[in-house]
Length: 295
Image 1 (cartoon, rainbow, N blue to C red):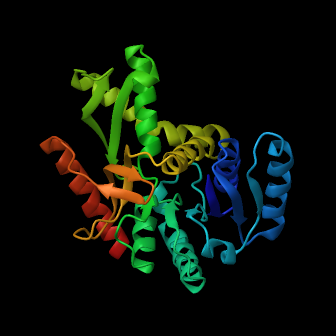
Image 2 (image 1 turned 90 degrees about the vertical axis):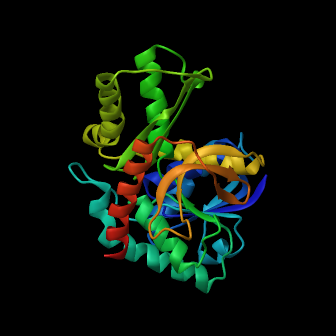
Image 3 (image 1 turned 180 degrees about the horizontal axis):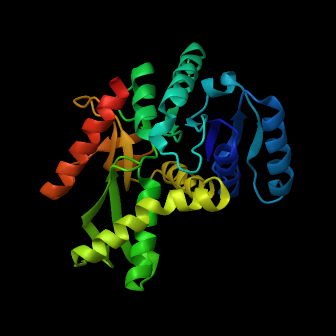
């Protein structure tokens, strides 16, 4: 079991992640950190009693001092997307919040692996990597892991197969510039051929899922919480797992999601076998995010 995980941001996403991590017994300690002390106290009071009988993990209100010796630091703080907003509409406020958090981590000499969830996650991940001077894969973002999960779910429904039998990834921007990697699609290890009309229909469904959820209930939090719990569990179990995450590459000036290897020490870049069309779309997404990150 991991010794300590700190979660910065105790809103719907952060508290859902804490709950999910408790359920899988991810760490001995889970510290919830938030500027709203009343809210974080309430979340701890809500989460802790109900799970104490089934999970040895201890959840409590923490501070940046707790982040100093945390093995993993999960960042969810920031303004959430509202109906009719894109993730990129959040850049101004959330970039400033990210820089403040990064400064607090540096002040407290925190050296844990940083997992960025805050949107727009590609831009915010790059900010953390630069502010913490960390380009070795120990700072990365959830990127398109949830889009990839949605891609697999939509494909499973469309092809009438179990989700467990589907391998598929989404790369590029976690947003409008996402790129379904059709070259990666496998059912029980076998390639799948789909016509262009079906591909467009499936891609549109995947891209619009987040907005549909927000329109229906005002927010998304369970899906990404499950994805973060999966990331943490794979690291805890010392697995090497192929995922689509956003992370800094020294030669690039922006972060985009791409298939990579998740290890207990962060992410490692790999050479993925992508089509020319997929690479072109990923590079276009990177150029767009570079303008936004450095603009």
